[in-house]
Length: 404
Image (cartoon, rainbow, N blue to C red):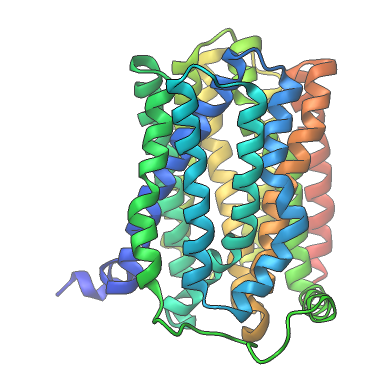
């Protein structure tokens, strides 16, 4: 009886949201196991830091071109079917890598090509996935639901790298990619169940056209709070997120560690993300999300700057915990602002622009930082990124203070 008095536990125990949450957790565990295995596999195949950056760009570049279309699909189609179709197609990417590893035929360019396929399917399905939370819970419970979604995402960032570390040390990359492939199965089963068969089809009567797409984008950007939140997320993605993308290079080349230290750092980032998400749940919905977004974005930037100066491998996990807290609180606060402030008929489009700022920014950041790493070294590149991010976040915070 006491359990149901907690809004958080009540949501987790609810039939729809609770099942969705668990299936997403299992799927993301597999994804993060692959995220640890893939860059290390690339490096072991002789890939350069620039090629590693290109792989990250291939994963995120489709977001730049297709996410707005994905947002339109989220507002005009059955989200349940959209998610299932594109995630089913995506599942075959780790399956193919497993087959190539078995045949000893894997090459770096093949991994990059499959990353591009994953990026395309993500760009088209993620707005439906993100905006589906708003259809599973009442509007007043949305901040709690989004924070819970962030909690499972960051819990998977702890469990996935930990599992990948064990598998990479024992059976190699084959085990991590096998876990990734299998993790799609429960999510695909639940995706067909999340919404009623005739799910919400907002704006289905309006034809999907370039003009309609531009109009909905203008509506989102016309709201100062939404515009400010998207700008903050962009800074985190372009300038700060490369800390995660180039963590294997930082560990191996600058700090002389191995895959065990890399998986520990990746898991530590997940621990920080988990702590940040739990902190948001404890704060409740009444706290100013703009202030949280700005201050914790600056914390993330400061940690990138410190990582560029750090010479002690043992300090890296603690730094990644703090970086995980900074990124999660900042981006989740921005996501809450966007989903709670966006008008209902363009919520899918607003979420797609959040994904564009986050995933598209990560892709651009990986490509640009990859060039810096190749020319100047990983730590100098992180120093430059961290300094620019601090300056950008200060400017964004100043702009935010003027938003009513």
